[in-house]
Length: 242
Ligand SMILES: Nc1ccn([C@@H]2O[C@H](COP(=O)(O)OP(=O)(O)OP(=O)(O)O)[C@@H](O)[C@H]2O)c(=O)n1
Ligand SMILES: C[C@](O)(CO)[C@H](O)COP(=O)(O)O
Image (cartoon, rainbow, N blue to C red):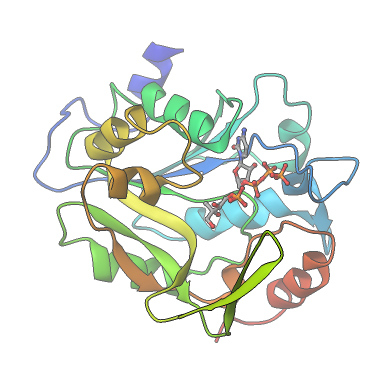
């Protein structure tokens, strides 16, 4: 497997002047909040799986040299719901949490990627990603040493409810994290090694003392989390991006 991975995609050079761009798509979740019979990444929208929409966003964006989909070791769906493609590899390295899945995937690429290379981690469950959003993220982040992520500024009034007490929290400076989250390979590996409870890559980078660049995303890049998300996501997928 290791030999196969090394041969796969790139020249042998590990540290290169021109960084490479790869996508890592964690797709090993069970979708407990969705409560469907199949994990949500394999649910179908207009005859195509959620995962296929997500992967297609990367396969049709030429800057991404390779896309890796990370599924659980005993996944029984991926062969049926994801079409094979030239620059696409499925790795059966899913872990107990999203963080573990991503860290396992990064480890598999140790012989392939160098310090400066960019990894774009994107949830399988965000099928509304577009080339425009990918280009926007890369334009804003590619000159930085660290990386950044798509996110949405909070536009509503925010409440915190605790022990029966309700408080209004100033929304200034609050963002909702989306993906892709794009970071330099080695920096991300090191940050995740030091942070085992995080729900996204940016949290690990922040904990390591860095400030990720916040890049405004779009609501069509929403995550499929609850059954009620399905209709809205289908509407976005069936409409042209703005
Ligand atoms: N052990 C895990 C858990 C999650 N994910 C992936 O991380 C993304 C975002 O996670 P989330 O929405 O939390 O997905 P699930 O864990 O599947 O959902 P739930 O929390 O409702 O069970 C999804 O693409 C999911 O497949 C993963 O690769 N490995
Ligand atoms: C990474 C993420 O999509 C950012 O919003 C999110 O954190 C993933 O999982 P969660 O379990 O829904 O927080």
